[in-house]
Amino acid sequence: MPATTKETLTLNLQTFFKTKGIDKPVSWMMKQGISNNTAHKLLHGKFKRGLPMHHLAMICEKLWCTPNDLFIWTPKDKALDQPTHPLQALKLKVDSANLNAIIKKLSPDKIEELKKIAEGM
Image (cartoon, rainbow, N blue to C red; front, side, top):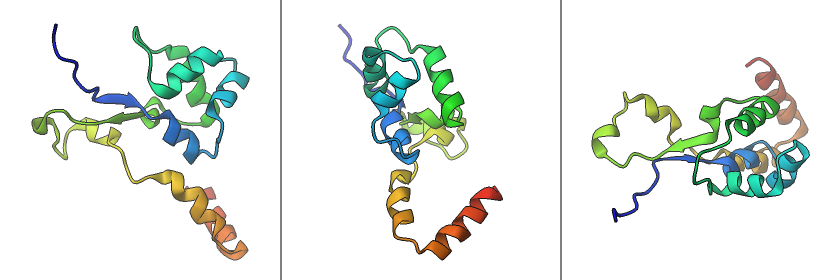
């Protein structure tokens, strides 16, 4: 039997939901019509036969994102870990889940300034 290799492309739903301010992602997915069992599997990457694409599409539609936002790529081979490789866009970036903590520390004036910047994006 071949040795199990570490996955190189994984779902990163836990961090993504935190970034979106969703503290209970399983409950959120269940409210969207995803079963408890499927929500847990999605959240913990436990699918053995493939991901239900219609669920990923629904998550992307509701949270205004793309599938690329939901995945992280970890190169297994150093030859692929080149700045020009297209999969670099899926590498884990700085933990943006801390954004909520940063925002909580801002004064109302700074929050208003941040709001204007975000609206201009």
